[in-house]
Amino acid sequence: MNDFHRAEMADQASADAMNTLVIVKSAIYTSGERDPREPPPRQDTTGRLHLMGHDPRLPKMPDKPSLFDFFNLRFGPAVHMLQSARLALKNGCDEKVILACLLHDCSAAGFIRADHGYWAAQLIAPYVDEEVAFAVRYHQVLRFYPDESFGYKYPESYIRLFGPDYKPEPYLDRAYLYCRNHKWYGTARLLTVNDLYSFDPDVHVELEEFTDIVGRNFRQPPEGLGFDDSPSAHMWRTINWPTRYL
Ligand SMILES: [Fe+2]
Ligand SMILES: [Fe+2]
Image (cartoon, rainbow, N blue to C red; front, side, top):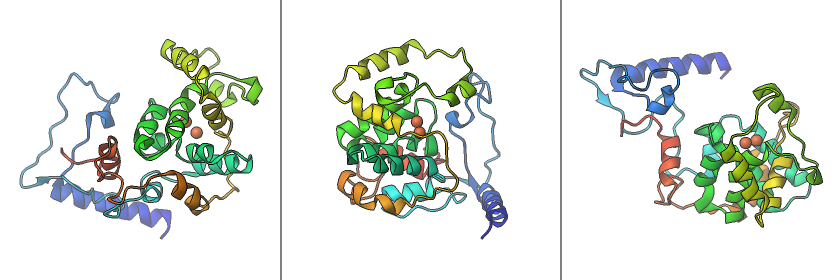
């Protein structure tokens, strides 16, 4: 199936779904696009039920979804994370750093961009070593602060993205200082060193290259991510079924 057919089918599925179900958008989906002091736009819901499960516009996840199912069906083409994990592997980093690289932007890819390091760390915390979650949480912060001893410079791309005058907020300065003095600083810093912003379109990395590392370092729950009652199960469930009414 090519992109055109895929887009056509998605449009059709979307139209069918909207005709038979009431599918609402959470406040965060429209935040910034509408005045949050006003009530959300009303839909005509006559004769239709409110969606409470799988959204027919999305590819269906298995009943017991694994981490790789989320990569394949919810995290978009995760090229950046895969290339970053491959680089860490090539640089001889230990498995904690490689896993952190593989997971570090999963929130930005499939959930929420703002504070993505913090969200991603919470998502993975119940399933990985504490040090891995720490590195993922702080990578977002450390990106703003150079460390020549690791060969890490302030990213050129940030000058393009945020302008030459951008200064991190005070809460980022505080988080940086906390991380800088932490015993796991080196792990978080290595993640930023391998967090490549220049994608190489010719480098193809298969998820399966990391099957063993994930198998050894990510405690995949037998019930599937989202259904294991862990402290972040609800977040995985929301990524799986994001448009449920409740
Ligand atoms: Fe990131
Ligand atoms: Fe990244």
